[in-house]
Length: 194
Image (cartoon, rainbow, N blue to C red; front, top):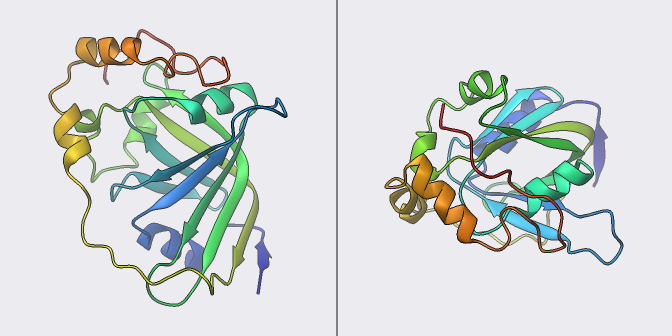
C-alpha cells in the first residue's frame, strides 16, 4: 500500500509530470488559523528540479494564503493523484519558499518552465519546495475522471494586465498583501516582470 521514498525517482517524476492537476496544502502556526488547500493546474507550470526539489509557478489570484503560510513557517504538502490509469497518490511533504520576481534566483528558475508564457498569467512568484518526506499510496478510492484541456480563462483574463494594473488589482484584494489570518502575504508593490 503506502511506501516512503528517499528521493523523487524517475518513476515518481514521470507520474508527477503527467498529472494535469495537483494540490497544495499549507497552514499557519496558530492552532486556530485557516488551513489552505489549493488546486493547481496549467500544463507546464510545475517542474521537478531534482530528486528532492519541486517548483511551481504562482499566478495571479484573489488571495495569497500559500505565500503567507510559507513566509511564516515554510510547511507545505503537494499531492498528485491519478484520475486515469493505475491508481496512485504521491505526496511531497517539505519546506517551501516563495521566490519573488526581484529575487536573483528568479530568472534562472523561470527557465525551468519553457512551455509557459508566464507574463500571460500574472506571475507573482515561483514556489520552491524542498522535500523532507516523499510517499505514495494506492489511491484505490480516487474516481476515474478525464482531462479534456486547460481552461483558457485565467490566461485571457491576466494577459491584458501590465505590472502597474496587476499591482492595482492586487492592492484592491483584501487577502493578497495580508492572509485571512493577518499574516504578511504577497509583498506589494510587485517588482517588475523579468
